[in-house]
Length: 220
Image 1 (cartoon, one colour):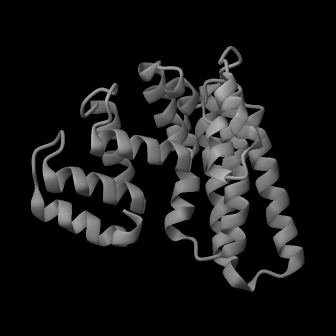
Image 2 (image 1 turned 180 degrees about the vertical axis):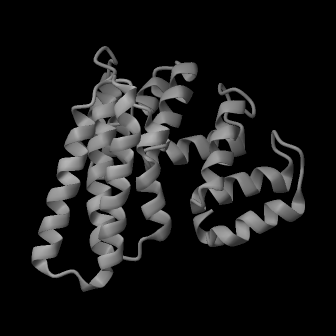
């Protein structure tokens, strides 16, 4: 991987995505097509960039747009790019075996079941390799993978049997995620602070983060 290209690639993507946000609901079909073409080109640069991508850095402009964008069109384009990046990341594990149980999920009518088969972290978890699962899930989560985010939240908050208790990597991930203003990161890290789960208890800051996350009780 050519790390020297990272700042320029991320900078270009940031500008493209911000342009998509600024046009917001006033996009005309021609503008939408132009922006889609630009984002497609930007994502292809990333996909051709090489293996071992720094998912935290690459995903930063995508996460910024999740926080700032009010455009449905922009969000759809972002979702498409995120999916491509996550698919490229999964290709970094050519020897990852998807067993028969997991393979059956490909035929499921539940879209979440299908998404789980596309997660390296989920497959490592399913096979019992929790160490590799945590590393993969965190990298996928930086690319806005709902599957990875949900799994990490469950592991760190509910202390699932067979997983490390209050793994420092997961806690640090949600702390950093929260600092970027991502609602799910704010909610999870706020919950950890509120109850003192693996961190020093801070009821005031915990409640504040949960409040600013805007996540209601039905989605917790």
